[in-house]
Image 1 (cartoon, helix red, strand yellow):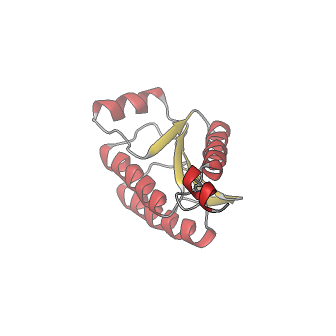
Image 2 (image 1 turned 120 degrees about the vertical axis):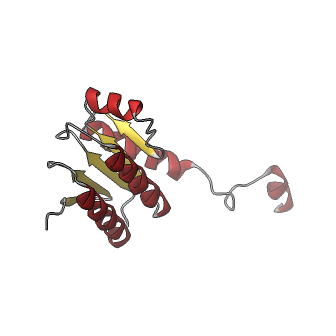
Length: 139
């Protein structure tokens, strides 16, 4: 049975879909990516669809599900390489691809993930946030 290869690039997983993504293959990709994110502690997933001429509604929903599952596992998903005809089809089908960020190509996708990661590291957690009252109380 065919599987879509998942490459590990540091803390990013790269999926380059080079064949027609039939329904069963899309479901296998969803399962494989969830397992790989969990096993590798990846913080980002890039899905390259440059080779796809068509993304039907099932594949579109599956990509949105992959992004939602990835988010739960603490990884952002970026879809790259979308052809204009695919974008038009997705809009015409009413698919919003919620939870998926898009970029023109893999390089832009990597940069986007790096920027998101850097911004996330500089945001203080609620527990780490120091208020003026906390500062005064510690004196």
